[in-house]
Amino acid sequence: MPRARKGAARRQSKNRWLKAAKGFRGTRSTNWRRIREAVTRAGVFAYRDRRARKRDFRSLWITRITAACKMRGLRYSQFIAALKEANIQLNRKMLSEIAIHDPAAFDLIVEKATGALQAKQAA
Image (cartoon, rainbow, N blue to C red):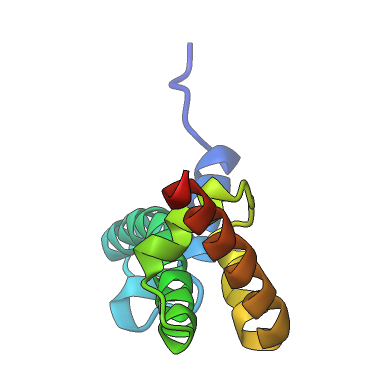
């Protein structure tokens, strides 16, 4: 029985790797060993950074909300505690967008939240 060889499957596999390495510079797009290293590393970085992006954006939203709260004489932690007390369920992304694009609405949210916090402290 003749020896089985990869044939077309090998070329198809290499073409997948080559396509993934398209746009890489130097031997990273031409040398077979370097292609596999570069594409694998790129995949690892992409996986890691998809998660890091979520952390970065949350940090940005918190910074924006903190700045908006300071302008209204309130600390971020107090504001978040007041929101929970007032049962206002807005996430940080929406709060930062409101603080930037609609300061009047943010003022109302702050008033409602601080009112609920003061009512709790009075009781």
